[in-house]
Image 1 (cartoon, rainbow, N blue to C red):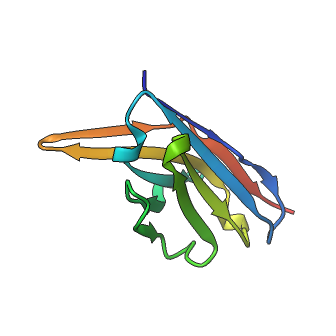
Image 2 (image 1 turned 60 degrees about the vertical axis):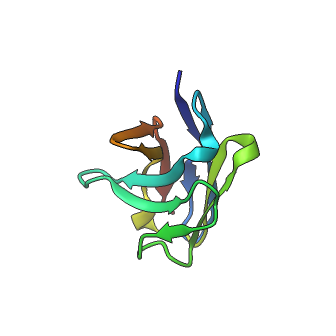
Amino acid sequence: QVQLVESGGGLVQPGGSLRLSCTASGFTFRTYAMSWYRQAPGKERELVADITSGGVSTNYADSVKGRFTISRANALNTVYLQMNSLKPEDTAVYYCNAKRRELLRLYDYWGQGTQVTVSS
């Protein structure tokens, strides 16, 4: 059974930091690209950051560049999102995603989400 379990969300003041974690089970984690998405109330889900299966290459949304860092520990089946200098506009539910393409098939898994609220 595939599972992605996010943790680390919460309430933080502007300028603060949080580290999100997503622990995977039920599939071969090291062969999947991993991403963090977020969805704010009334808005579409958007890509925040992604990282290749080996962790060599990363990609960030312009809105979080220089503030957020995605990383992974394949030995622990875990992907992280370090979020610094948080702003109120970072408030959203953050979702972990695992993706792998194999020939014509796309394997695409989602976590349940963790709430991040940035407010004074």
